[in-house]
Every structure is written in C-alpha cells, then in structure tokens.
Length: 333
Ligand code: DAH
Image 1 (cartoon, protein in one colour):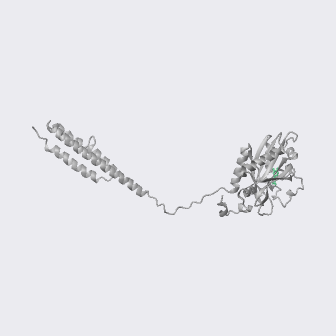
Image 2: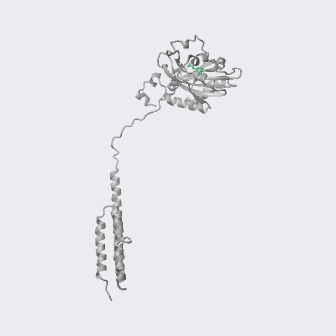
C-alpha cells in the first residue's frame, strides 16, 4: 500500500493558507473575483493540485479528494463572507457620501408668474375659441381710414380730435381701439364669420384709476345672414358667466358711429358700476365699406376693456397697479 506523496497534501494545505491570507487582505470586489478565479477557476490552483491525483493510489485518492473538497468549500465560504462584507461596506460608503444635510439653507430661485393681464387674455380667448371663434390681429400703427373712416366716423367726430388720438408725423396714428381689425378682417374674409382680436390701444387720455394711455382691448364680431341683437346679448351673457360666474350685469343704451343700435355693459367694481365693454349691431355703412351687402348680412361687434376685466376679477383698485411692476402686487397672482 502506497501512501500519498506528502507533497500533494502539503500543497493543498499551503494553498489553503495562501488563499485564506489573500482573501482576508482583499479590499475590493474586483480583487475577490480575481482570487476566486486564481484559486477555484478551471485553470486555477486547486485544479492544478488536483491534477496530481492521478498518480495517487486507489486507497489514497478518496482521502485526498475529500480533503480537496473541504479546502474548496472553505475557500468558497470565505470568499462569500468577504464578498458580503465588502458589499455592505460599499453601500455604507455610498450612503455616507450621498448624505444630504436637510437643515442647510436652500438656494433661492426666483420664479416668474403670468401677469394678470396675460392670464385674463388667455381665459377670454379660450372662452371665444370654445364658442367657435377664430383669432385675428391687426396693426397698432394704423391709418385714419381703418381706425375711423371705414368705421363710419364723420370727419368732425370728436374721437379724431388731437385730444384723444396720438398722431404720427406722417398722418398715421396709434390705433385708439381694436375695431380696426373688424375692417381689415372683413375686407379679406366672406361671411359667415366669428372672430376675436386682441391688442394694445393708445389714447391721449388723462391717466387715472380707471384710464391708462396704453391699454388692451379684445374685439369680437360675428357676421351672418340672420344675426340679431338677441344673439349679441346672449353671447355677452354666456361670456360673462364663463368669466365671472353669476354676477350683476347692466346693459345701457349708448352710441358708437360703427354700430346701430349700440350699448355699453357695466359690472360691479369697488361698489359701483364700471363700464367693461361697448357693443352693438354693425352699422350698415360699415358693412358697405367692406363690400358686404347690408340687405343680406347683419352682424354684431363688441370691444372689451381687458384691464378693467382684470380689475373686476381681482378687485384691483387702480389700473396703474397693472403697469408699475411692483413685485409685492404681482406676486399675488
Ligand atoms: N371701439 C370702442 C371703444 O374703444 C368699443 C366698441 C364699441 C367696440 C362697440 C365695438 C363695438 O366693436 O361694437 O370705445
């Protein structure tokens, strides 16, 4: 009976020792993986040692085989343990590195807001688009023809007076209302039409709590074969209800050169009536000026004061607050 050459058992023990020391010294998962390959891999040291098994006697083989399995198991266990420990340490390190001090003062990032004029314009246009209106626009620098003449203003109408209108040296003017868009739009489109136009207007008005020299209007108008004053009233009622809900509204007879009959609409603001729009049935002379036959077509039109609508919505006491960019005021919206 031959005994196992002492070298094989010694080799196994030496390998076990070396592996245990190396694994204990590994500091990264990468190193551990390298050690696993070098000791237990297909071409690793254990395989090499076991390569000598063929030379063992049949009696010695099981003992050395069992010993080799035991060594393999030990190394495997140690690798597993080290791996878990290193992984845990890695998570600890990551948590420590990513810790947030939630008590640290934050970084102030100023945030913009939509100006109350823009937000009410958006809402109003949405309401009219919902009613089937299309959106149009026109120039702020306008000729006398589009701002006045085609709208049936007689040559001596007081609104043409230098007091109210800002004229340019060449005789053109800053439009005093958005009604110019009615003429421009109707010249280029045939009825039936339902159109809304938004824009800035200019007047040589004395500025006070309800008047600005530069302000916004929204014009809406409809032309068809069978439009009546009832349609106008209904449209204004639906519009004001969509904007404000159920609030007191007053219709007053009025006069505009471009509508007949004409009316103004007031709503409550700061405990009194405030005019928010002018309206009426488009005057036959205006229809004629754009080439429509007033025997066939009729229409209504209205011009809304945007600043005043915003003042009513937010109960703003003075129109000038909308323009002096005071952040204490603007931050409320
Ligand atoms: N353009 C008028 C103004 O600025 C408002 C107005 C009145 C517009 C009657 C209209 C209208 O379309 O039909 O005072």
